Length: 197
Image (cartoon, rainbow, N blue to C red; front, top):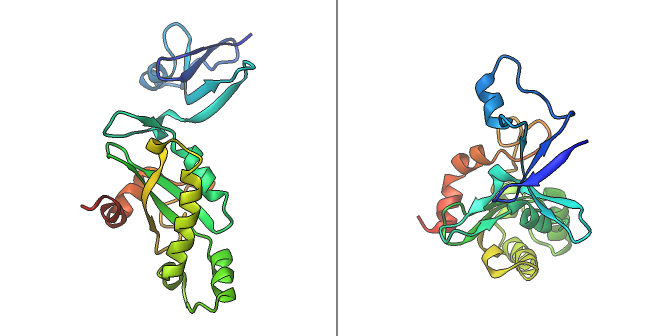
């Protein structure tokens, strides 16, 4: 009993008896989410596959629009980078920029073990991130991921974060998801390094 349709930007809208009527005592928020005709704005950008199934690409608010007007779903690229056991977190950036960059958090245990096997000296997470060999390792991972995506979706520059993202510092939600707005503000120095500002 649920209908669905796609918006012009690929957002999926749904309508039916199971769609909620609105937010309690908040008509403005309800109007932003549910149209007068009953269509719920999901906030999800989707792709309809050849077999008719729907695949969620990313949240609409997470889509990056480059200065050239290209719409890029960062989660696919981030997840591809995080497939490596050496990477704990990857945050693709590039809103209104000429190219994509990434803030990368290495996995301290795995990269630490990798460094010890190569007799590379380090004492802390920060000192591990500053080893040139670690930067080369991350570059190899990024290059391999870039080969799987279109040129416009390639990470041209990245910075290895000198600290691990932390819920207590407001960088992660309680479910360990990155808070993009906070990260963009907190890591302004790293963004300036990527974009040469």
